[in-house]
Image (cartoon, rainbow, N blue to C red):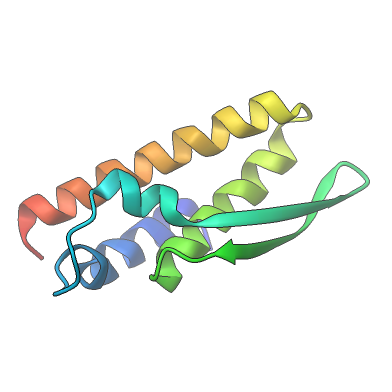
Length: 103
């Protein structure tokens, strides 16, 4: 699934994460809640395993897909980490827009 398609799917599903009756979390906290572990084989990401969930499977999938994409694109841990951080910030902005629209 492409990042754009997943972002569209997320926009339809984040109401649970943002508009639920549980204590409010900031979009940034939601986007950064997912923890993961990636494994490599020959310089390419072999797998991504969620080690701590955000509570929303679509957000977890988005973050793991971002980790896979960044891991395949960049060879240094520093650049991969920066890439994942950028993707999480993008997700937080999507969540903010979703919350502002109220849907």
